[in-house]
Length: 276
Image (cartoon, rainbow, N blue to C red; front, side, top):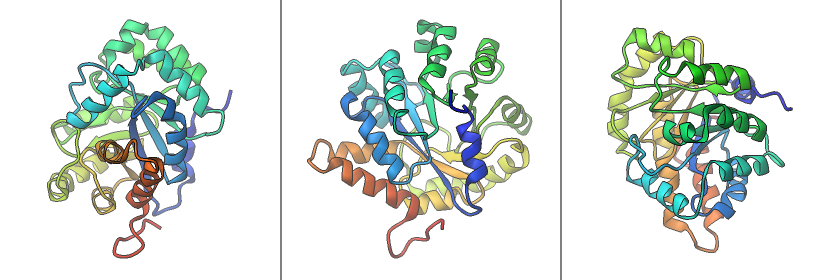
């Protein structure tokens, strides 16, 4: 088995100013048969981490974009077993860190031990369960430890300093910094910037064990560079799915998606600062 700590290695190996870009993609969107090729395109275009969303019929923390993608994937028969198969297939050609992201209900229905065992055997790296606060499911912490899966937790602007420190201790890989309160979705850049400034200072004071990636609301390279100035990187989900929705199933939709991802990370040739 390959060393499971790909996420840790990624952050250790990044150059000083380079921002890590994590992309969220609903597994099976826009079509289950395209997921493996799409992940390859995202990685080739600059993605450093893949958050693979496990579609669920009642995604409480997600806005209309990810709800839409989840409905499409569910309608095409995507389930946890098919997601594990996708990861196994991705692993034939890629070492990109893969983090499973979703809600606890399908995991409980699948069976906790069975789920984490399959996550390990398919060679996933981490898990984000936004509706499972640290300490609420000790069994999950134990299974992450048993199977070498990184538990990644979230902090938000309404998280207290002491709670941030608890979350830092409970996390491994990175801490997901939710830049604004509310559901997922691309937002006006000024809204994100206003929300982030003071919050990130608190995060930097209290999250000391793990790298920090900031997400929710980023839709452009300028947004990404602005909100991740004091963090190790950024996360984009809704803006990526919105882009795919706008170009799929056009003949060159995957190439256009690769171009979009490259610009998110590196900016256009002129006028936007590159992280390098």
